Image 1: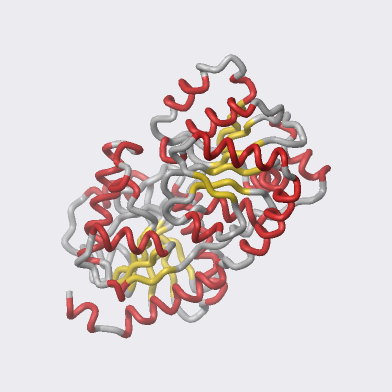
Image 2: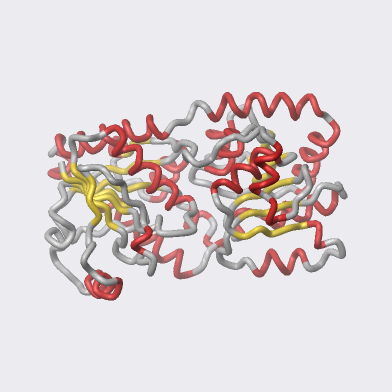
Length: 384
């Protein structure tokens, strides 16, 4: 098989979609030396000027498409309406879309990654442009995708709720794993060196994720300010949309300097943050999977997160759960960790055990099996 694989969101400052595409292709190529892979550094509407930094893997059965084209030439090509892009895409047998695009202007079969349906459930938490892009991609997937890979049970159920016409047996659940660059660190000197540019104390509360309303930083800041703990609150994540609401919230407090925004951090820095934080707090309203809590557990962090969407699938009994609409709920759990070291130690132990249940090796092997079934089962195409 020749598999066209979308890596368009891996160019730089990766978030969830980019991390999935990056790790999945690396592990696919670790386990699959029989099939040929074509990597697409730009893919339909998603184009990044640093496309040459998109993920590539130096193995014989992997090539990067569009190598000889300038960024402008690629943009012009994607913007030109075409009835059949099969030749342009390198004559793939399968195209695996990882950025919400699901166009049927080629002869390949389509495998589509289902992250979440957050823009449909919480439209107020995103921009109009993002809502349109995501809805169009999800709707087109319900029409054209030969198979969907859902990153959680919750995502599968949510997709079928909004698009009940899609055959359930064409959705395979493939949980994610921990990125190979996220590692637990116990050496205090290594941690200190990796975090020296931030000037942090030895203990702090930690939040990680793009600055956007869905992550519920407003609740985190409100609750943190009320507990009056001496440890600072540290938030690591790039700017998203509507982040000004978070800054405006913080400016209402006299001691706003206790909250530190680090911006986008490297994997080395993130590993150190997870490994040394007093607790990782993730009060998100909605997640397709919840990769940060898996990473935090892998590094042995004590985790507080929301009992919503897919998060209990990842956290199991190794984390403390809250109601993301309740400040009292979060404050209660934060006080619990401050006052009860035994619970904190127990959760740290459970966290590592829970995180070990998730594997990119397993994800890649199941994905390879999906590719084979898509090619073999011609009835899927005939039924559509």
